[in-house]
Length: 585
Image (cartoon, rainbow, N blue to C red; front, top):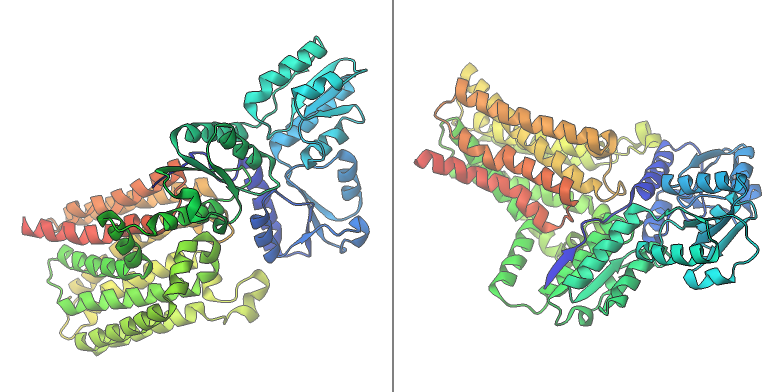
């Protein structure tokens, strides 16, 4: 079964802005934070915001709000009278109104001041419509469709506007109905382009697929309209908030499923539904391709794949220096990296529950086996280190203690008020720790071996330093690229990563610059120091693959999952293969 995902998915600009403003308030931790009504129409996202401390607006209103609290105006906006009462209350007010909605509010207020009556095409009772009615100052009239226009009477000059999430294709019908009823009426199409693009994608996929899955909140108007588009095209269509709502019977016999989502649907929610569809596709299949998919998934999610990558990268670094690395080092790198990454997967399971449910299901289902596998891998790494020499064994124990200290809540007393309980909560901690851990292991183990693989001379230390720099830059780029994938979890799970700290644009420039520096550094090392090394062959699986992955994320907002890890971490195996083939030539 093929799964076609819409190009325009995830939060629209207004929703993302509202979520980021809310996260900023919660992270500052300066008193209680309320949302004046549901911030957006997506219960899954609201539940997670609530778990991070966001409070619902109390039933008693201002009288029941805690002194010194901050109130966030929801993305749909508020009527001016309600907003004025909030600002006069002495509470902190953060306006998260969607800029597009705010523009419609200003338009309505201006035209009412010019004596016009306002016809609002929208859903009566919807918070955005209620806010517009407030700006219309008693001169607003809500119609659900063209058929309601005839019932309007006693109006003078008229302005027609739309709730921003209405169906763009029905706008001409509204223009015609209002124009016939009120000649000379002013028409301003206020349907948001983000909504229009999602509707266009739904129509496109309805024509290409045999079924349509719409992801989003049940009370979201724009999500509901996507479902109407699918059903209107005669397509089996289901609107879901949770992946568990999709049963095997919905996709049985379907060759292609389209996946679309409303403008208030986070990418992690879409990702979870896509992974559910992939899981349903795997069930009962016995083709060679299906077997390869299951094998790939098992290798990636068990971290065997990343362990193999570490072993291959270590061998490649040895070939860069013109050295032969004994097989015991491949075992050391493989087992230790696999054990550490497996431990990290269990430590970070809180984020994977929603952000990567396929990984979470795998960890839960095979928990016993994976724990035994991780413990055995660590013991094997100790055995390999012991065979390599006491210096290597001491290095492995040191790295293991550092990894344990990294996750322990030892900083709560000092930095707990800023949400920092352990080293892993510090800004960029995961990004830097992963790179340093790999770099120290792959560069120092050959130097500390008995007998040393890298000679313990000034030149040998310089060679070890080169390996450390190459591996650290490689892992830094790889982890920074993965930060973008984490950020596509909509800041809910990304932690204090480069993208959440710098923003998408500045973080992008940082990574592009680092990838360029990495390529230039490798070329300089090849030209000035190691002209016979396989560095030229390593440029493609290294900097080039990282750049290609980042470019793809920017263009298509990748959906993550084990295939993303398989493609990105394949650079290590390809680097080892490229170095080996170069030395054979």
